Amino acid sequence: MKILFISPRYEGGIGGHAFRVAEKLRESGFDVKLMHVPHVPIKNLKNPSFAIFGMIKAIFDREKYDVVHAWNVPSAFVMKFVKAKKKVLSVHGIYSEQVDVLHSTATSSMVSNAESKVLKFADVLTTDSKSVQKTYKEKLNLDFVYLPAPLDIKKFNEIPDVKKIENQIAYVGRDSFEKGTDILRNIEPQIKGKIVYCTNMSWVEAMKNLKASFVLVVPSRMESLPQSIKEAFFLKIPVIATNVGDIPEVIKNNETGIIVPPNDPQLLLDAINSLLEDKDKASTMAEHAYDFIMENFTWEKLISKYTDFYKNLS
Image 1 (cartoon, one colour):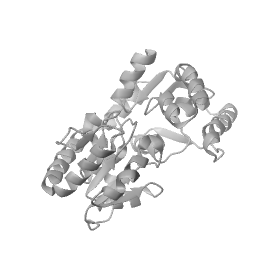
Image 2: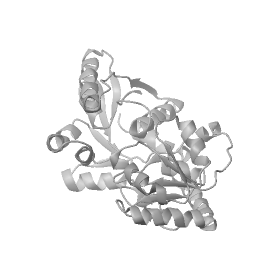
Image 3: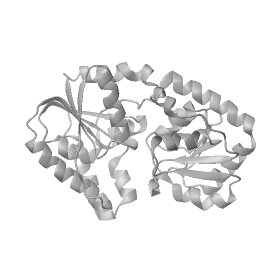
Image 4: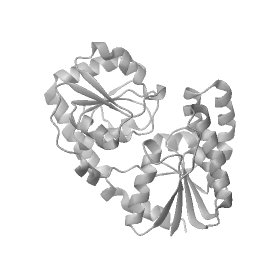
């Protein structure tokens, strides 16, 4: 089976997930090609330039594919012009809501009006989030296939042993408004520990910092399901996160982690300081979280779900 993946980038977030899926599919005998498209590296021009350059590239691409799989809404504009028997689009959040938080009202209104049309470019829609699946069904009456994003535990062999840093707190992800990093920075002076922000660094460096920490904090205002939570679970690092998106699907409060409401700095602060002081509770939660991730979210558990999905498209 010949498959083309399209993503603005192949690292971090949904792009990183696309790259990992491509790797695993190749290991299972699929022929997967990644389309690389240039873009203008200016905030409000990145996605539009990617879509324009990608459409031009797709129009002149003479290859034909069994499946073209676009990752996130901007890639759908490129996917539309690719010659393929089946077209798949994956989203890891409610795109119009993400734009609403990050951009102007005019941009948000334009995207919201176009969203349903763009999603219909695809023959099949997928998401890694049950909450996204439910919301799009209620909002636009669209059906999404749920394909959870697995954790590749073999990659952790690249992470060396590190010494724990007393009361170190890790943040892993983009430094942006929807991720709530401003909330974490505002309470930082009152936290009884030191925060290391793993934002612009390689995955290996981020994991080394996470492994050396006592807790991962996810202060997001909106999410699907951050991969960093699964990574922390595997490394047996307890997690404090907000109850947005699919986070409550994996974090059972005081069992596999601690859940707090979004946009509540005081409760987030209290949870962090309390867990730093209760090492026994932190250790117990980390063990439960590790068991949960090994049972539900490794590639060994989920690879057949992916291979069956692509085989059933033909």
